Amino acid sequence: MEISTLVITVAALAAIAWLAFLVANSMRGRGKEEVAPNLAPGITDDTLESKRLDKTLASAVVLSGILALSLPIYFVGEQSRQDGFVEEFDQVALERGAHLYGEFQCGNCHGVDGGGGVASYVDKRSGISVAWSAPAINTVFYRYTPEEVRFWLVYGRANSPMPAWGLAGGGPLNDQQIDELMEYLQSADFLLPQDDALLLIEPSVNQALSRLETADTVMTDAITAQNDLVEAIQAAPGQVERAEALAARAAQALKEAGEGIDVDGDGLADRIEQELTAIFAEAGDALGDPALVVVLNPEAAQTGAGEADLDLAHRAVAALETVAAKLRVTADNQEKLLSQALAGVAFLEQAQQDKKWEIDIAAVADATFSGDREAADRAVGLFNAYCARCHTAGYSAGIPQTLSVGSGALGPALWNGRPNVQFLSAPDMVTFITKGSENGVAYGVNGVGSGRMPAFGPVLAIEDLELVVQYLRGDTLTGD
Image (cartoon, rainbow, N blue to C red; front, side, top):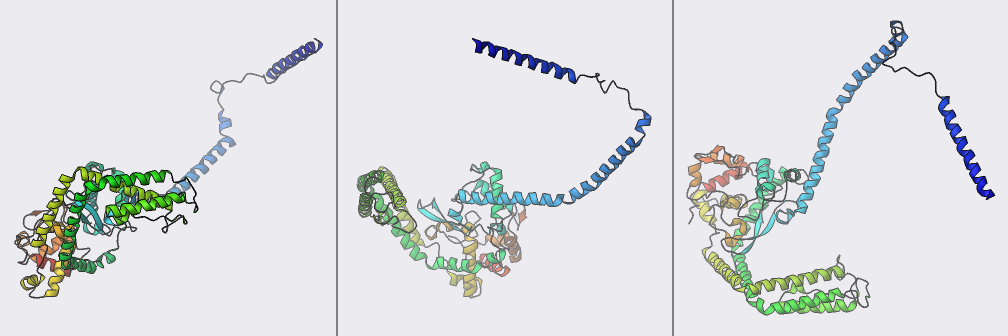
């Protein structure tokens, strides 16, 4: 009780002391009430016109001088800053464009460096899967304007593997992404120097002539491959169940990868490595596919260089499952697929008989180059290397699908003297090929440009252009 009373007394005294402090503190600062500035008397002229005014004016003059000097000094560096922003923006766009080129796998068809490559495509005339020759794009801006290149990117090229990439054409890239991709394609990181582009003439001509020389071998190989496809389709129903069973066994074994002794510590138990190796060997033998055979070594974490056994096992099992799935699809659609494959064989056998890809260079030399075989060779090689993609039907699909020279594709046919009708003189035609066409701009006698005809002046010597024109204005491109 006494302790409680003491506590209450101390608390009361503390509260009184606190209240007294607050009252005293509030009274201490109270003085004469100030007058609001807008109600107070103004400053007299005597006060204003004293040193106070002089100081104010002097300060204003100093500040004005600082502004007068600092603003020009600031803007002297403005152009440099703006150039820096442009450079930074271009660099960011370039990096994004390079990323897009890789992300959307442009290099899979056109080459990692843009030097050209191949793309899978089903030829519409034969129904045969072909390796379509994709053009080099590290020289594309020597042949086309940026506006024309952008059009191909946005809308693609119909009747070829080139898809539309821009939103307007139904593709996945918006306008900014197309701009960034264009920035990369035009950059020094990607675009081949013009001198280097000119160095490609000789190898391109030689490759085109070699293509003609090896055509018979290519045809024989194509027919063999198509007959192999027919046999594979016929065998599919008898293989599918075994393939599915092997794939299921391999997948189950992979699920048990960590169960058991693992000497090499690669995440695959020794017994699993042995079991998978046996399954892969059985699959390769049963399905006639050596690519399915994979050997895993229980005593080494990496059987092959650079790939861990566990990763290799996953990839091999996935490959076996893919083969099994394809066999199932083939077996379920055997009748339709077999009909298409047999039609492909018939197409190739007829193509081998017709040999429409052939060019009688000796006849070209006699008829057009006064017997100069070397000039005829070069003219034919130049045309096939640089012109046939657009002016010879089926050329990009390969020898088996190639029709007679100058038969027309994306570009017009050049048969039966058409170049002589369109251009009254060889120099006019050389000028057109040198500069290319412009959309809506007239050329020759009756032509109206579409922008699809590229300019070859930057990538071919004038002497080569004149050879091609002489070849095209000769009498050997008669069609059939």
